[in-house]
Image (cartoon, rainbow, N blue to C red; front, side):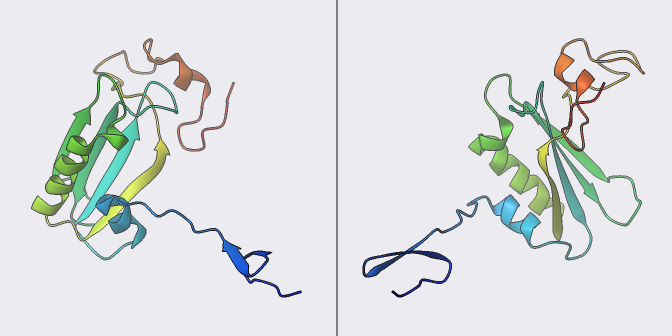
Length: 143
């Protein structure tokens, strides 16, 4: 019996699974890795780890430098990661600032509300109780 490298053999056919790659130009640019400065940093935030209601994009021109530009987009309903208008706006922002590299979080990394602005410093956001018991970087449940 013949074998099929990377897939299952079925009769005269080899069944191969293809990974679905993103059509997003931003994800493609992020996948290319570091190509130099300026770097666009893209981070997603939401009330839980399922829906991103906010995305923040910063432009950094050197290692350890503060962003020279920062823009935020919000979605009252739906998810900013799948909103084509938000995606276009982000891409335009990144291109307008000449970003050579894109660094993007692979998950939602916390509450969309800002500590010290939307709720008091050192406290848990009253609107996003999910994040009180989850590590924003690993997604693990914490006590």
